[in-house]
Amino acid sequence: MGNITGLGSNQYQNQYLANVQLDLSIAAYTKVPLSWHDYDYTPNFNKMYYIMEGEGYLKIGSQEYSPKPGELYILPAGVLQSYGTVSENTLGKYWCHFTSKLVDLQLFDLVNPSSYVVTVKDAKEMKGHFERLIDYAHRDDLTSGLRIRSILLEIISTFIELCDHTRFNMKTSSTFDKMSAVLQYIEDNASHHMTVEELAAIAHFQPNYFIHVFKNFTGLSPIQYINKHRLEKAVHLLTFTNLSISSIADSIGLELAYFSRMFKEHSGYAPSTYRELMLNPQTK
Image (cartoon, rainbow, N blue to C red; front, side, top):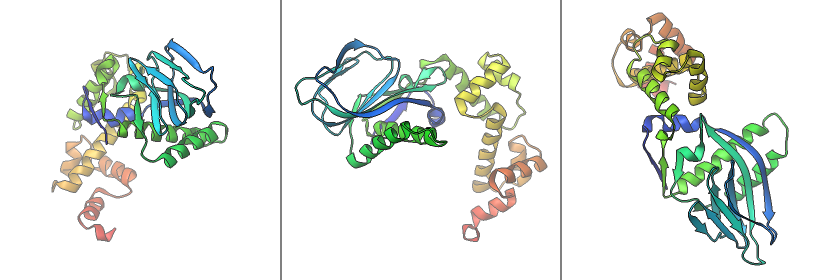
């Protein structure tokens, strides 16, 4: 299985990737014609090809490929590309076009795979992903957008897992640097009162713009994120330490009554009950 290393802190990688904005424009299966070709162009959208049959030619960036059945290709936005046929036995492929943004970056500016192709282990599963993607792309029901996002994430995740090495390049964006500093500040100051103005000043943003960027970055408002972080810290302390409930409330900067009420809303249990359940899981 592949692994992700990076210039950025591992603490935030999952959080960034969980908030990727995906937008599918088209999905289909095609047995390409002999006229299928284009050379040295740079699309502003991502493509994925899952090869089922035939032969052809791909060039992605500086890497040249002769696609084979069972291979899954990522063709990222902003990368120079060429493609074409090489014989009458043309490629048959599932394919899709989509955009993928994280704040002010494309996903594959941030997650840099060492190769643009992987060999799929479970061909039936991958074929099923693309068939369902095509099906939902032609629907207009309430959940089709959610299904499409889920399938795209599954295919992208499979690609990353099968890739030998993927680089998480967080420092390609100054916004990521600024927001990482804000998240680290929240981490270091969980026991103190923090204001939006204070956090915005760290990023050198106006408060209203900061709130917008922060929500795009984390999926939460600053206050929601701070409370979520505090509650996660409280869960750890309740589970792994003998600190009193009052001491835990102090350590995350909340008054005892407010902490108890918020914790129960979050978990369904009062802090003392939650601790007892963790110590005696058979009583759940």
